Length: 299
Image (cartoon, rainbow, N blue to C red; front, side, top):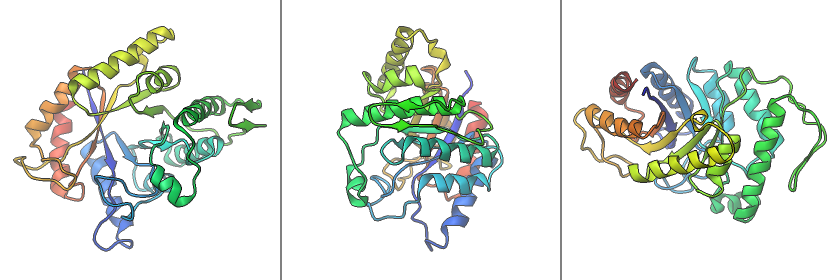
């Protein structure tokens, strides 16, 4: 099985901020693209989260940053891993992702989840409803996305959202694939099976990842969908150094190329098709040379 790699940029606390942010971010994105990375992801947070830093550390708004990156890259696909459903009105979110898709020439994804960080909601005055309601809003948002990207302008009436005429012009160049983040077996993975093109499972060990894939497949079968239609992806922290064994900023120990290929091979053996890496040394040009070799070996 072939596998592709993505990169998630999680930390913007670089020397000389804020003036240094555009240049540093551009270099990381272009180095990633040159190395052969297929997709580039940001988090959808307004405050920084652990283990990447304290809440007051530098954090960029996700979709405006993706639009910036669309103009500085050519091939890499772009998304947030993952959009908090509480952060934006669903129709505005669909319009925003569509805009990124148009401006990038058809490279946008919609990554989405039920949101979790109550601290930033309270800090910025964003309503943070109970978990059950957040999942209801997530499902309605997914329904609205499918309708708007299908060109359906008919009224939508849900429990939480009402749209009289959801016009979406211009349409996307490519209907943005939908990734749902999270591994809840009863609700989240059921929504993946019904609405999404990809799941996103956090790397909690091979046994956990395999179980989540099995549960997802069960949901797909119950809904009459071929499980192979859903792309299986994993998010992990993995930093590369020549010999491995170095302590990295986010708590992980770096890997050599051989160690990384072995880890990715184990995930591929479970059926994983994409692994997205949060690299603790993503500003180091040498790390991208090593990643290019990893990509060559796992492709």
